[in-house]
Image (tube, rainbow, N blue to C red; front, side, top):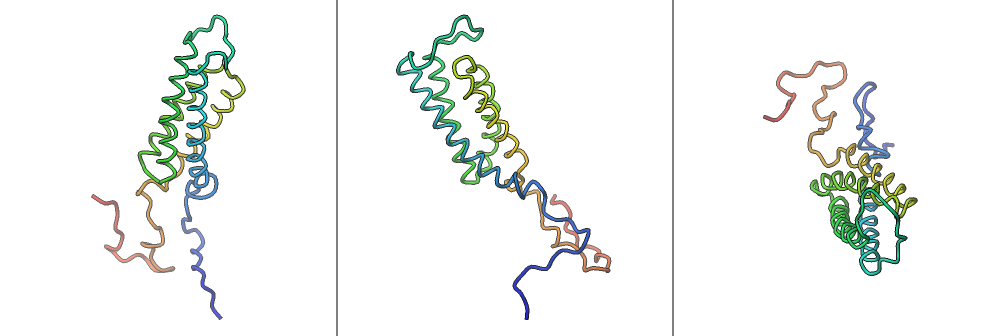
Length: 170
């Protein structure tokens, strides 16, 4: 009786990259969802700051002295772009990944500057952005640089036939 399972690779053969399994692969999907949700929340924060300046407490002398309307516009615009990048990640677009890394880094700076207005959320959002950067930077499913290691491996115990290794594309 046979089973419909793939043969296991011989001992010592390279397996799947850790970046394409576990945390990073699932992290990319999670990063796309996070970016979409955080983008929408930034849009809502922006609208709240633009609509009525009384939503957030006014602070005294802060080094980065923007009024809340300016912060609202910053959150609104950045939120829209972050949500679009999240959608790009969820649909598997390479531009979504690159834009996601750049926007997550920009989002960390934005939340650092937003700390006096909303400290708990700003710290939490910065931590989420760090995770998004890690997940998008370590997942290799977007790149075409990986190849199936079993495709060019010689049968066990025999040396490879000359000329069968495709090598790098030129």
